[in-house]
Image (cartoon, rainbow, N blue to C red; front, side, top):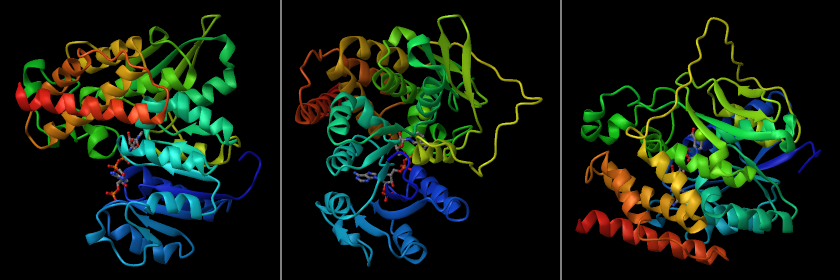
Length: 383
Ligand code: NDP
Ligand code: MG
């Protein structure tokens, strides 16, 4: 991908938060560098985006991955093979994976099998299968560039500072909408309350995960996998202003921070142009007059962060189970079937089943994921 000036981009999950912001980055390039071009996109249930994109980017091919009965007109592919056909029949250089949840892993595998590099927002892909995805990427001469803001920050810092002198990574967290809520009120919070995120406007699942900090738990696993760092050397700090996204500490005791406006278009822009650094038109962080705070998160408020550390210590299968159980629990919470504070209970009980299982193939990953989902659902239904 490096050095080539024009980059043809496929956006997966084009109607989602990441998808729409990626389209903005592509639009911006059309009036500046002209380096990015929308080659294709996927949508799952959004019927408006395809019409809009058809007018705006007539050359882009669309895949409908959802229910065929509600497929809009004019899509190039639909049905179970739609994603695979989009990725095998569209000429492109890089795929932005903005699909939510574990469904994103299959998409990451397909992109790499078709020799396309990945700008990876779907953190579940990394949590579940980074080791195998990286092997596949290397075999097919592709790269995986993180889009998640903290990891995009770490990715830039590590390249600039040098991995060999870095001893500790820090990712920041906003603390979510319940950061200062009295603890005894947590259990009565609804999914809509959890989705009122103070800084970022994101999809529902990740917004709920930000309130529990399971999002930061997933990101801890993500950072450990991407940058090959044991969890004990990765810190999480609550930073409500969300200006500092990541920090690295070096052997000589210095701390380097990556600071930018909390705007996902910035890490998407950086990933799409990587390894080049191109001017961006999304503003910059002006910290004059701002107070930037950093706090240690508390276990009583954010148990899912500690559970993620436990999963990392236990191994790959436990991390897959953590993600799966959390996704199931969040689904129940979103429907009003369990309380906010029970999400962590479901994940903890699922992990207590023991996950010392080998992970040798993507099939193993999907099997562990299915098994953990069933256990988590049984915990909710029968306890
Ligand atoms: P959204 O809920 O806004 O969007 C999710 C997208 O995934 C939608 O486009 C949806 O399509 C599509 N989708 C859902 N289910 C499926 C499926 N089974 N198969 C194919 N496509 C599907 O989520 P976000 O954009 O917020 O998040 C996307 C990913 O990026 C997540 O993994 C999240 O953790 C990560 N991320 C997001 C950030 C953000 O700021 N939003 C920041 C960092 C990471 P449709 O709408 O058509 O149904
Ligand atoms: Mg993040």
